[in-house]
Amino acid sequence: MAYELDRPALDTALAKVFDLIEETDAGTDLPGTTRIGVYSPYAGYRFPVYLAIQIEPDDFSEAVDGLLGRNGTPFILLSPTRELCSAKAEKRLTDKRSGFVSLSESVAIGDKRQLRLLRPLDEILAQFRRVNLPPPKDDGATAFFPTPPDATWGDVSIRFKDGHTVSVKAKSAGGVFNYTQMGMANKKNGDPTVQWDLLKTFAEERGILDWSSNKAHRRNQKRRELLAADLRDFFRIEGDPFRLTEDGKGWQARFLISPDE
Image (tube, rainbow, N blue to C red):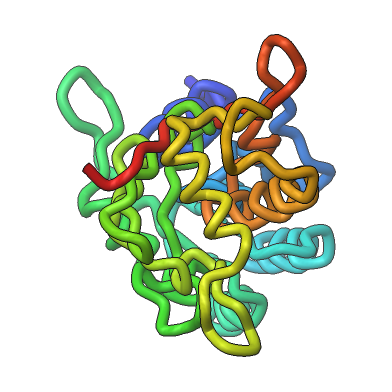
């Protein structure tokens, strides 16, 4: 009696256990290889994940070469065991900052025949994360904020602690940052930029800035555009963090912002 592997069901189960973003089109033009989802640990970071099931080492090696040739960004390759992944094939992957995961070393069948991870996902993907993700605390001018991949501007809150520091939250992520760490320091003298000053103004005005404010100025239009760009760079959330007020005469933050109290 021959048993046929239910590949779509396996792909779906693996996408779930690896906490992937599932995709509707999983097919590839490589034999035995499917794209089962996207690994997105933070907003702005998306890596395709493939499952390759072959019988011969040469077939697996061809799949590796095919994926490397088709992907301009790092990816993760899953396979049932490590047997077919030679040291040479794994080196080709790591040289391109891609990762290999042996399912036999990482996944088991638990209660009710559900797949479960043998180790925490961050540990399984530790090497891949190390070469493709910035450290939680960056020594550079702008800090890395670990925005959850499904966060929107409505999930963000910024509260000023003093004139130079804010407490930031976005769903489960949070931290305290100064204007330099948020990318709003003047490159010439290190002072806060006009964007930071405008962010403080939005806080003082409880998120709405219109012509009734004593801080209203025609230059705020350009400053708001620059502030929006800085916030997008820091949080890596798409879309404009501000919207027009209902009367069209001012701007309202899409996120919660408040002054030091």
